[in-house]
Image (cartoon, rainbow, N blue to C red; front, side, top):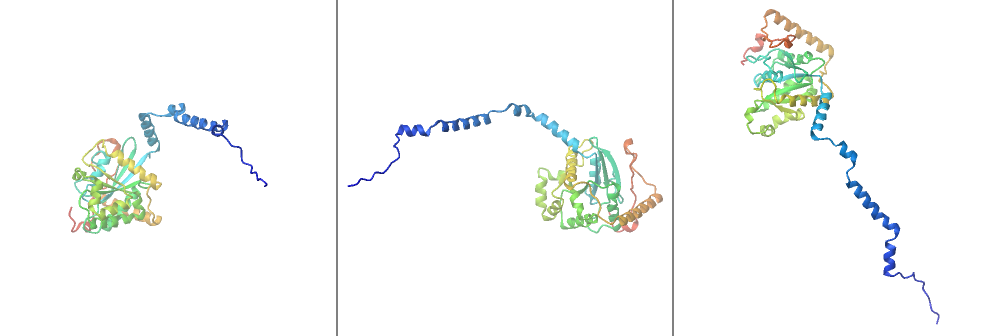
Length: 315
């Protein structure tokens, strides 16, 4: 009987198998991995040397902000006749420059220096709560843009903390529409009368007032600031306000410009200037006395409006 032989692989003992698993080539891998892990856990001298202490980081951050900040800020105040719009302007200026005893009917321009930077503030005629803003007032509001060439960096929409209605929203829409749709990109809400909030946050107030106030804040890209108008001099809330204005300029790529026909705009401006000059000639203006020489170049345009504009209107 023929026998069939099958060639089998050589049998390895348990000891031989163990030796083959731990051959010299395989032993190098664990050592390399271990070396890599150890080197990654060991701090390098360059990283330790380059690390800055918190105070140094703050100093460098402040230096970067100083290098990038605008040399001048041009601001226009918008709002009703009664919520403290002019008072907000005085707060920014650090002194009483805008008249508070009566509402302004013409634009008033003032300049000051805040943290070694020129700041221009223009107060505009306040609009009315229960009626459409008169045409002359609307034209004067638009003229404010020409008083701070080449254009304002931001519009500060002054809204008092309190009840906000659908009518309030309609008045804001009506008056900001005079500047065109792009005005919203450069507008920030400034809440006054913040003491009414007490311990309540402004965010909670916005939520509780409902969709009308929320709509306005959303149109301003959720840009808002709360300010206490009863602090003069070095105001703790002003640096944050200026930083927010600079952020608007950075995000929107510059200052605001009116997108209207240039010839028409110039014609309207000339007409308004002639009207203002005529009124100034007919009545001696009682400009507020200046507190220092730096304000000598500022002009006041505080005059009574035409009688046709104030019939039936009370402050």
